[in-house]
Each structure stands twice: as C-alpha cells, then as structure tokens.
Amino acid sequence: MSIIFKNKLESFLKISEEDGGGGGEASGPMTVASTGLPTSGEDAFKGTTYSNLEGATSGYYYDFSKKKKKKRKLKKSFLDYMIGDATSNIKEEKESPMDFAMSINRDQLEKIFGESVYEFGENKYTVKFYRKGENYSYGKMFFVGNNEFAMRFNKKENSKNEIDSISFWNKWTTEIINQDLNFSITPDADVITEGLSLEKCFEISKQIFKNRKPRFVKIDNIRIEKKGKQANKEFEKDLGENGKKSVSFTELLDFALNNGYTVKEPADGSLDINLVVPMKIPNKEYVIPHQNEYKKTMDVDKFVSDGKLLLTPVNVQNFVSNAQHAEEILEFFRSLFKDNLINNLSFEAIVFASKVRKSNHPNWLKLLVPKM
Image (cartoon, rainbow, N blue to C red; front, side, top):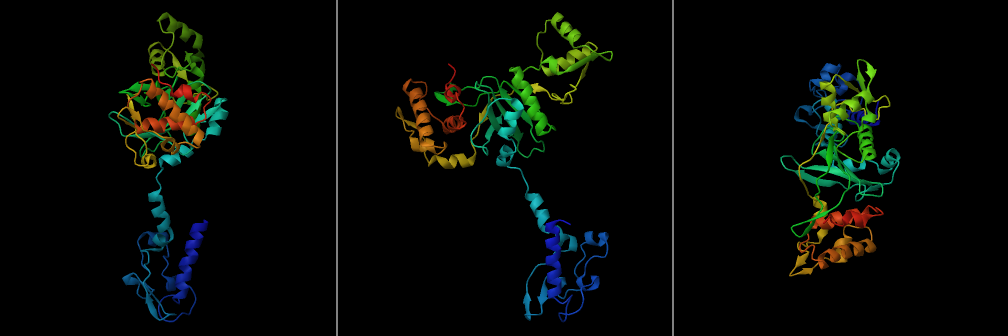
C-alpha cells in the first residue's frame, strides 16, 4: 500500500468515524454497512454513493458533534475518493522544456564521450527553434571537445519520444545576415531517434562525434554478412568498385539490399538502432527565444539607433553570470559594429552570444566570430 493511498484511506475513515458511521449519533463500530464502502471491485467502478451517510444524496454530510451543517463535497465513489487527486495530477503531468533539459546530464555525456562537454546556457536552458512546415521544437545543446563540434538533442512539443532527433554541427559558427549576427545555423545533419532510449541516443551521438562527419557512419561499426558469413571487407571493396568511398546510413542499407548483403547490428551494441534511424539534412531553422528570456530585456526593443549601438553591460548581464562576461560580450558586439559588420542587432543574437559565453568553452570567442 503506497503512502498516498494509506493517507487517503485514513482520512476517509476519520471522516466516517466523526459522523458516527452514518447518520444519527456518533457511536457504533465501523462496518461496510455503516460506511457505504463498496463490497466488490465492480461496485467501486460503478460510482456507488455513500448511501448510509445522511445527506449523501445532496453531496454533503452532517457533522453532528457541532450540530451544524458542514459543506464538504464527497466523491462519487470510494475509488474516486481514493485516487481523485492523483488522477488530476497525472493529467497535469506534462514535460516542460526545463524538465527535458535537466533529463540530459552533462557529466554523463562527458563519461560517454571521453571529452570535455560544455553546456549551452544553464542546465535548465533549451533552444527553441522552428523549421518550415513543422511545429516548433526545443532542444538541449552542447559543445563537445575544444573545437567547434556541437550537438543538440531535440524534442517536439507534446512528443511521446524521449528524444525525437539529434542535430549535429561539425564546425558550429555564426554568420551575418541582413547586417545582424545570425545564430540560426542549419545543422549539418539530423539523426532521427524516435522510440530510442536516452542511452541509445547518447551512443549514436558518440559515434557521430568519433566520425566527425555527421552525414556518414563508419562501416567498421556495423557487421555486414553475405550468405551467413561476415563480409565487411568484401562489402567495402564492392563500394569502392562502384565509386563510393563513403555512404550515408540509408545509402548503405540500399546498397546492401541490392547486392545480396545483410546488415547486422554490432555485437557490442554500440550502434544498436534497429536499422531504422535515418539521417537527413534539415531545412533552414529559426530560433525563437522562450518568453522568460524576453522578460529579461528590460523593455529595450531597439539595440541600434541612428548609427549608434545602444547595448549596455546592464542589458547583457541579464543573460550571463557575472559582470566580466557581460563586458566581454559587449566588447565583442562593439567590435563587429565598429568594423561595419553589423548595423542591426536582434534580441536573439544577444541571448545566443550570452549563452555561448556562459558555456565556459575555452574557445568561446571562436564560436561567436561569424564566418566571412
């Protein structure tokens, strides 16, 4: 018996005892007859009322000890009474972007990757993004190693999957668009991970990181057979003779099927993805900051006016952990503005630059400098 259920039962019995077991005087033993408890599981699901409690038909009961009517609503049945609150809680259980972000542990990723992993923003922060023809998604982003490799674990709103896809950037950077610093860089590839556990998703991302080319999977990680015998070398030779030095995972499956090979999952489970995880090149994406980020702007809508940069350390410090980081971010924007690289500055750019700095990546400035 769970603690919640036990407390509910004790509460119910206490109410019944106060009423004296059902109308009249407060005396007599607690029995099924006096409390109106269902005598079978079937009765519990029928919505049986507490017929022996005086006033039960109106949904109230009388407290005879105080000789006045107390209006306390009763549930329709014993089962409703016992699980009513729990049921309402279950309905309200909905994973938020914050919950999702906290389910992906940076320390665990570091152990799996064997490299330093830098969290984009704080551990509760997600990137919210939109792709043409799709509803918005949110993702938890990390930088791996000391170069520019980045990955983001994505989840669509109301999705039942632990992770819907993983986005990869082999060299994550920024660019200038419409005289503004743009952080909505399309990933090099997405790996679709519907139905896979977090652990499997982490393993797949590790394999991609090891390959460093998100669009391709190493054949070494997959067992390929022909007529029941391992045939990896023969398969690679066939690929070479057909002018294919590297293939995407889906291309690999097609080539194997058309040439009499069978693709098996590796024995060590390092790529145990049931051969149904395709990669795709995403459409251009757009970053949409969360509402709570907008609330930190201090109602400053314009950051450039009449050829002047209006950004201040106070604005920036809303998004970073200390004054030094704020000064560094401000100096970065001033340099771009001074060199006439930007003459417009969106709120999204300030948020993203601040989160990159907050990651404490050793080469954070290199991640921010736009490609020319």
